[in-house]
Image (tube, rainbow, N blue to C red; front, side, top):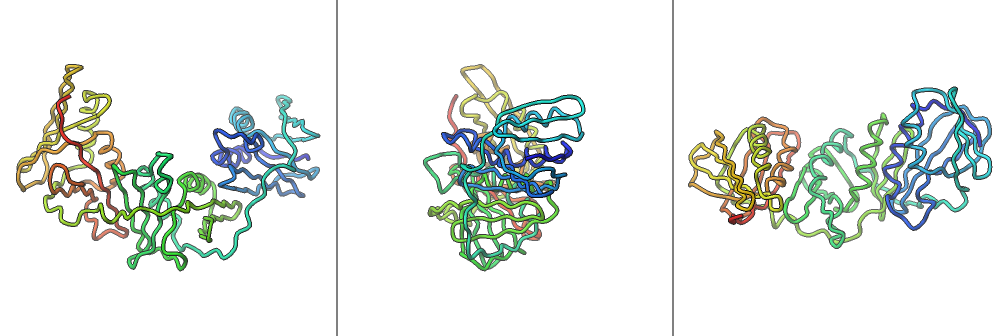
Length: 371
């Protein structure tokens, strides 16, 4: 196999595919990217056996063939080369890379043992604008669980509703829900999509001009003009997340997002390094953010103007968790809907009911303790 290509074109594809390559595997060939050259079309594939992604790249083909190439070595090497022409030549398991400045050689592996793409039938299109998809995944992905024992929570729950399509994620301490009102899906009413697949799609969308989304019985499929991704869905029962969304939180705190986030970042430095506990003291139109770590002898307190006219309340939060939620608010102010110091807190951006799409988050408070 032999072809010529600009490094700037190849490196974008290799870096995108590298997000699919597993970080740990007992199957060595999965550490490689499959290169298949037919004429002037180079097809590259990466997989971890759960996700398959392919990318078609036009090159100057000299000799057709197939070879698998170590993803990590190739990606690192290409990043260190300026934008120039590179000649790729594979003979047996030896791969030579030649630029105008030098010659380099690495070892590859034959293509015969590389896993085949899955056969997918009865795919149904998820009709959603690419920008809406990006925004939905960005708003909820931070709440996906990393607990390997709670497999259902390690993905984003996509659910058809009368209002549109919901994107939901939760890890038990926080929940995020984004309603894409203009999205449509005529297939199954709900599916759990792996976060790794969604992240790989978002990365490839940055270098693609078009996007189409499909869901089959066992797979998520994403297609663009030059790339395709197939991922197994998570076939588990997602918990009834609606039960934890409060509908009777009648105490509203509205505060500037930037001011609250800045205060929390300063206070966090002085908080307990394990609990990150902060206390929020609410009085009329005044919010105090307080932390104290008796072991370290540290203390911090700031006062912020806000809109709050209900009874006085003290409520505790993990400052890191609260900051994670505030990062997803892109309006000037945020509203925290409260009930009592131990009840779930519902966070919404400003004018949420009037927005094109609807977005909310849940943050669980923590019991205030003496550090």
